[in-house]
Structures are given as structure tokens and as C-alpha cells.
Image (cartoon, rainbow, N blue to C red; front, top):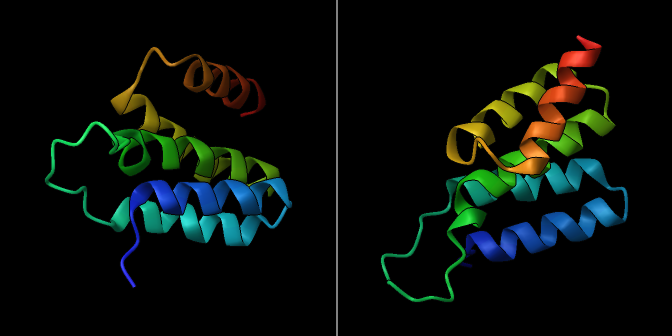
Length: 98
């Protein structure tokens, strides 16, 4: 079965909403390894293949009190979208605790 980044992110979000953090992590990690389709279709959300899974992994790991991995994934998200308000908020939070 072929997965797309958007599908993986939607499933990860669904599990996150159910507080099934380990399943959410699995889906967000899968989103990072599926290939971005070559098409120029406006329906391909490139964020779902790049920074968004990392941002969500930061949240997941924070919920598990694994702040080392949370920071690692937020830093990767920041490499794509350094001015994203969620990335900046996470940076402030993670810096305040560690």
C-alpha cells in the first residue's frame, strides 16, 4: 500500500487527538520517509513531507517528557520554517526547561 505524506500526517493527527502518542509518532515518522510526488499538483502539501511532521513529533515527544527528541525535531522544523510561530513557541518553551 502506498502512503502519501498528507495521509500519514492526518493519521498521526488522529492518533494524537486520541492521545495515542506512540501511534502518532509512528505515522509522523512514516510521513518523513515517503517520497514527495514529482507532480506539480497544487494538491500536494509539501509541508507534510518536510517540516510539519517534525513539528508534530516535537509535540508528541514533549507529551512523553522526552525533551531531547522534542528539541531535535523542532530544530529540524526550524531549518525549513524558522519564522513559524509554532516553531518559535516551541523554542522558547524548550529553552525555558532545559
